[in-house]
Structures are given as structure tokens and as C-alpha cells.
Amino acid sequence: MAAQEGGMDFEKKLKRLAAVVEKLESGELPLEKGVALYKEGLTLARECRETLADVRNEIAVFTEEGLKEFAPEAEETDAERADGEEEADDER
Image (cartoon, rainbow, N blue to C red; front, side, top):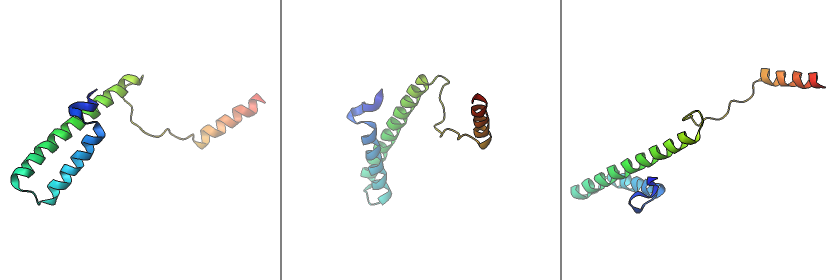
């Protein structure tokens, strides 16, 4: 996987990207420095997107039904609970 592409792991790239954005938003950089940081930011953003896409594909491989949304399981409804209790009573 490309997690360590360019000698930096994903988290370090993300932190560096945040620092680049902060510096650019300050508006206090000379033009040349701003352009260089902008290019660096684009590269970091692309690399982070690629890493996330790679990880997403890996997760898809490990799920039987393909890529699933990460959402909490639906809680058991009152009707389902009541059905379960009736079945338990029938077994006694």
C-alpha cells in the first residue's frame, strides 16, 4: 500500500497539509513561497486521496457483500423484541 509514499505516513501528510493550508490562509507569504506551498499542498492532498482510495479498496475486498457504509447497526424494534419474548414463552 502507498501509506508510506515519499517517506511520510498518512497521518504525517495530513498534518503537513493542514499546516500548509494554515500558512496559505494567513495571507502573509511572499508570492513565490505561496505558490510553492500551494503546489506542495496539491501533492499532499492527491497522495492522501490515493491512500484513502487504496484503503477503501482493501476494505471492500474483505467484505463479502462489497463496500458497505459505516453505520451503526439498527437497534431491535419493539415488535421484534415482543416476537422474541413470545418465542421464549413458547419454548418454556
